[in-house]
Length: 238
Length: 316
Image (cartoon, rainbow over all chains, first blue to last red; front, side, top):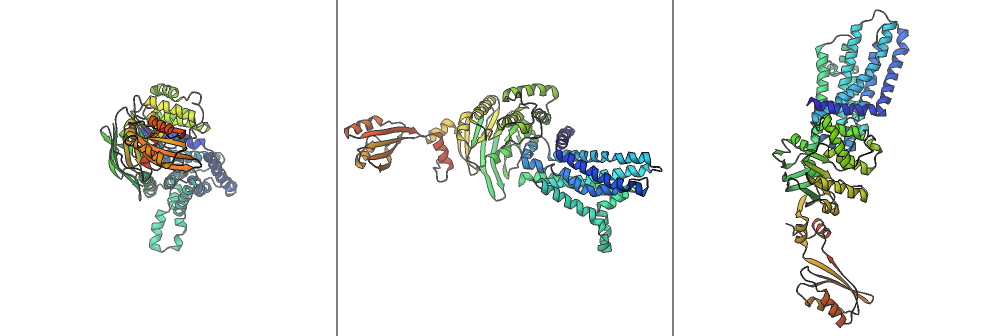
């Protein structure tokens, strides 16, 4: 069974890296991050990546839906969905393998931003390596949660643009939740805060890896992957 | 052996397939014939596990699609309608992907690939991108994909649609060849296609089976009649009507006068042949026979009869 994952995963990674969309989004992602990071880096004169860690989650809001929008929607649109679902794969294998493929592209993008990390190592002093590592871990986890939402968005439609917009909206709402806390009554604000992605990310990038944050992100990923699988199965009963 | 039992499939309010049952024997080529939207593709999609039945079930050997879809999928090679392929892949990479999905190991793959290239005529395109291929070649890749694991059962949904006549002939030949050792279900809305490839055919219309049998059986059910067209000069309605009394069963089904000529259409059972009598009668009455042509009921008439609304319903 594990073998099936790797078969679908390999094909999907190949197809992702074969498409110009992947490279365009990758370049845009890196350019925006680099510009925001380096333009203030020497002015602030601090040896950390805090600007980078606050910019990437915002760029993610566009970047992640762009790489996940084709995962399922494209296959539905071209009809290959019928082909792949009548091979001896389970729907769960298909969704999870595709999700991991998108995550691989995301990881590649993150790996490129390590350039800034190494620059910091060379020019900076007094560096808190632990905070940097937990910052990257946070970015990877949040990226994983976004990608699960993106997978869901791609499963509900056969149009890639629609998939992009649906994923973008869900991610955007989860992102701004803790920015609107001052407008909501007190009893709600702690709930909304817990539901907000940014709140958990801030915790992790501060270097505090709390089980609350891990449980939140983990269950977000699990939830969206599970409903994606259910939705894919629903084609049988439409 | 495939057995479809009381299969019903609804899409919302649309009743695509209404309670059909049939079976396909091992090593048989079954033609699934019907007009567009008759429910052919839906039935095939249920057999291959893409859709679940609303009610009823499909059995393949000891398995059924509701509980053992995975086992059944392993036994089947499937060419879906419209032949969806990954257009961003090379033919080789694509077939390798399918082979891996079909649990074929590396050594086996080499020999299977060789066989499939030979069989489907893919030499020279193996390292091309699928999006560079012509429609005919795409169809061959689709077929190659379906047979790479040497499946017991082959399900082909409209395998020759969109091909030119030469390609159609080739693909049909290929299917016939494959059918020597495999169970094949082939669907089409083109009668000649089924006639050319299948041992037995099922005609389906509006989600129901309207005929099921070998081509000869279907023909004999509907045979009965020969039609004779006559174009005559110097004939009158009365004299033409007398033809009916020559032998039992002759029927003048159409009489028409146009300019100076008379057009008549006679129908009679295949067992008799009144043409000589008609000729002698014509000479006696000083008719001039401009045309006398006979046509047997063709399978096409059978098909049209069965699938056009208001047609005769005397199918078994």
